[in-house]
Length: 317
Image (cartoon, rainbow, N blue to C red; front, side, top):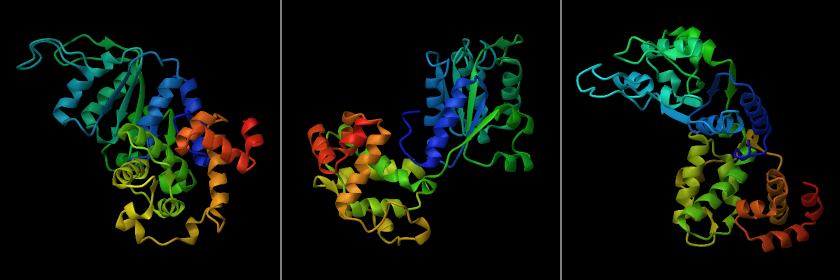
């Protein structure tokens, strides 16, 4: 699961769960707050699975009107309704042999849930306007940003579908519960968006990183990425400085509960050495990738490795 940036315990646990989900061809329910990266996890499972060369189809159950979602998933036959002038394959047929990712499954209406249950049980469904079932071989990955047991209690979600989906469940931690990943994520997004925007920047000032670490991130990783992108655009110098940090973040005070092992009164050199060592470990010793994520060239990285006596630890990766 190399595309998941981070070294926190929760990310290491998540990688192990993804490895297990990829190894076994079962349904998986991915849960977590909005912006945590549920689709990224689903794609990673697909990429590591035996279906990696087959279709990967994504549908957001909240983005399609209730009266259209059934035909979108299961298709229809010519003449099924006024305006149906030809057959339309549904996404389950398109995904045949591969994987379908049902995002925000908690928004699926109950009548659709019954059809989804049948696909999971029998591997078949009947398109609108047809009398013959269509058989498909599709792996179903689903995601929810709400507590499904609570929806079951309120009658909004079928209990039998829930148990069919959660043969395996993967819970994604919110960003506030893995603050030690924020520096690596920040540099990853800095590198990604500087390249996209064709803008050259050297890094993020330490006081900015401290501010980012203290923020609670209700929008999670998506919010962090959007903020880094905005700060790149607003920055005039080679570093992201406090000048471009939004005012709401500036008012947040450090909370002792949020204290991290590496946010200690060390010198800037100690902090820089820490980030280089941590990034090098994350990149399994790949110096080119490490330099890219940190936003420096390879010769600068080599000098810093030598300066901080990190060459030996880099060679051992």
